[in-house]
Length: 338
Image (tube, rainbow, N blue to C red; front, side):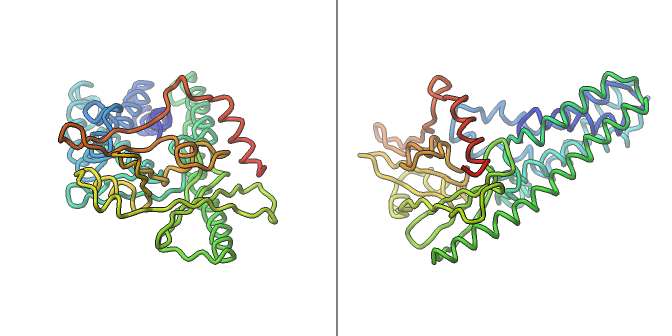
């Protein structure tokens, strides 16, 4: 999930657990604790695709490691606040924020390794986008307004509690939306007589109304979108891409197996001269008006040999190439079922 969401939810959690004892400081510490697992970006980075795949949402997002982390962090703040708040309460704040971070990340489609070091399985429920405005903005507004009220005032308590209740209710709604979208996707697959081996669905970015599904057949990967607002008679269009597993299986790059694992079974590959281009459609299509792989999947990986050494790069558009206004208008149009 995006950092802003983690921050405001952490602030609400911290305020409700320790606000009565230490005032607004509880909100700031809760925000810190809730974002703490994402400090893995300090060593995984955003510019090294290999490190990002291997280390982001790994050990710092593990339930077991977070449990071990909560003990010393609670002790640290216990002494920083000169033992005015019990160690038990500090531990409750830290473990609640840390575990809630990983549980929320688990709801997105990136994949979170909750069970490390016992299992490196990527766990994802695919019920909410990594960034969802309708989820985050109301929580942000409620928390910010609440912080202007005095500690433990009735208005502040109501607003902070309301932000947490809204978060829980919204997350519950996402599972309902997912069930509705799945029913339409599977009805379309049955009507089109598309037999598939693997299936996944996920909301598109910034919303929970426009969904996409990805399926694997024997040789093809298919992806289609469905809006909860579109007319019943509007057909889902499935776009097909040859998986070409032989390109990955025959590749001598040590990163080929890593990308197959990271894709959770949803990938396809293309040969471009001496480079194998790997697309991971579990993140959906970037440009919903395009069909060609490089135009619609604006982010993909490259495997190639350079001077006898296998390399892996991530291809993604620069901020200069991104037309955010046009992309947002396109998204709104698709959400409305057009």
